[in-house]
Image (cartoon, rainbow, N blue to C red):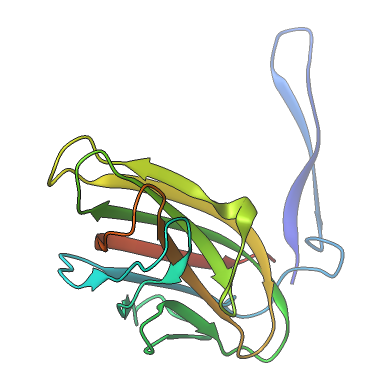
Length: 180
């Protein structure tokens, strides 16, 4: 399979673009074949609290999200109190991940969110949000690139950074796309 690529663009004396186009393979190994692994998981209007025992300690969400079957390729939802996905593809791939969460519980509270690979949180993916009043929601977002092998897990983990009160993840989304 070939793709068209623009090799050179320049303008002539009348300001008209002259474009040289070539047909050839995409990327070092040519174009990807078939659909690439991807998935997205979400939860909306959650009321289950995530229990926090220690300040500044990241824990699994304690909730299960819903995997979108219309867009899923090579992922399954985690169903063990973790909000995340398991990669079921046959080969190790690199993925672009984005995640958001809206959290509540408490007045003037600071919450943290990180991605976790196989239960180990990734410090560099950390995001913070805070509530200004009771009932307010802290909104957090993170993005990251990560390599996953068959049966490895990616989940969201959360912390209360200002106390030991439980938190409630009202809404959350995690989207993962293979980088060709």
